[in-house]
Image (cartoon, rainbow, N blue to C red; front, side):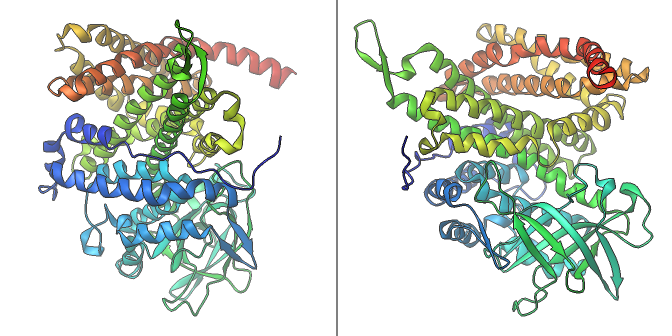
Length: 588
């Protein structure tokens, strides 16, 4: 087969504004949004204006750069990283529109909108060009860390540049010998007057070097002299690429290499070196040896944001699959007329699997973002937001794997051919279950810190809220769906009881083996619950009522029904795992 040097145009991406608007205005509720502190002017008209402008930028400017970024990728020459010029221009228009500061405080030049609105438009960036959207995602995490832990001096010096989009930010955790186990970090920081000098290497640094912003602020984990061993001896430092706004004095930090990756080729993933020529100047963020809590401020934001990446790439894949299925003609109907493949039941099943999952994913992502907004002033919502974060990150990114796989399957053999473009979605999505903590790490966090540590208070409150939604529903058209959600709710309660009992008995092997099935069970349950609430919210809206009811029914039968098997995996799977593991990894 011969290839082509020309890149075929990508199918047009259209931001799913109708569903975004529905979730914001009817599932979460305009009144609830306006009740947030300092959001009294957040009207449906303002929400529409923000969504419309974001959709235009995503569809018209960002989306056309995605295939180009994948094909050309990033390059490194003489320490300078370049990305395709079209991507630089797309980021420049993003900056000009003030999108980086959409949820930042007005006191630093931001727009002060709630996180849930920023999350809705973030989906559009991720769909349009996932690799490019990593740049503002990490900058937002840097903003969060500085707002929470930075000194007044550092905030005043760097936040305006970050919020305007003139600066970008990175997260520097991983080292060659230390992946998820941060206790193994070796990078060191030495006091040097009012600042510090850093020495060492970091790997997998997304957008670690580029020419798209006036400065790059690296948030770096390192150890001070005589620091305690393990994670209790880690501190966080801000290390700027440039030491002055005139870009006359370059800091002692450079990109040594670019990683060669399966996907997200347009995102420069760098090996970064600090201190090869006397030490990289850095500023302490927070207190000495308290770097991990500071970094978790960044990571918790990034984990929800990565979940939204899963939603975004799955939406783009579904749109491409739907367009292909409508055009591809194969097979005949009863009149022996050739039909498009979207007439075939199995193709219809795959497209509806994706569509129903997307609406559940979007509802959960925005619900979790709204909980973060509420958590700033409500301790109960802080518990809820913390509980939902690993579910958003883990469940949405796992579903993205399946949805992008289904999109390839709809294309048939053409899905395996790079020129059709759908393979890029599949490749780009694959990283999402890995970075910011693998699905297993999210599941252990959910089980240990978010469910067992508080004696199940947070998860019990969530399950009680699901139950409260179910009890008053009397609509005949929804009774089958109510029964399906109730069945999964009881399975979640049974699993929670089993996990608490086994953990209480010290059987950590069994409980940890059940962590990922537990996360997935809660994810499917939350999806079904929120689609049921969506169907209820759509009852008085003729343009949405039938659609939301159909999506709920399909989801319950094709996705929510998986909780039957997950309960078995939780309560029984650990025994077979223990037996097999002993035979294969210990005795063998």
